[in-house]
Length: 138
Image 1 (cartoon, rainbow, N blue to C red):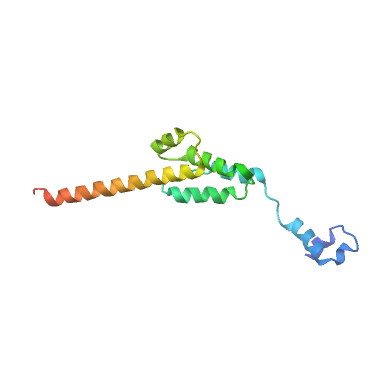
Image 2 (spheres, one colour):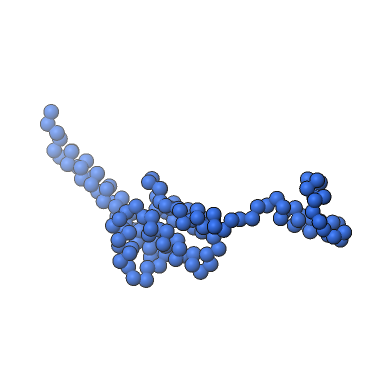
C-alpha cells in the first residue's frame, strides 16, 4: 500500500491530510462505473421462464437504480416490461392502452396473472369434482 501511495503526486499539505489521502486512495482503488455496461445490463433484462411478474419488475427497479435515468426511469421500466413480457395477450392489451403509465401497466399485468391463476385453480377444482361424481370405470 505504501508503494502505491508513494507513486501519487500531492502537495506537502495534502500528504498530511487524512481525508485527502483517503480520497486519493479511493480514486485509485475504487473502479469507476461504466455507464454503458450498466445500461446494457438493464436493457438486456428479460423475464425468465419461471420468474414471476413481481420478481421481474423488482429486478428492473434494482437494475435501473444505477442507470441515472432521472425522469425517464418509470417510462424505461415500462418499456422493458412490455418488450419482454412472455404473455402475448397481456402485451397486446398493454399496447392498446393510450397513455399507459407504469402503475397502470403493473396493475393490468398483475390482474391478468391473478385471473389466469384463478382460472387454472377453477379448472382443477371442476376436474376433481367431475372425477368424484363420475368415477372412471375399470
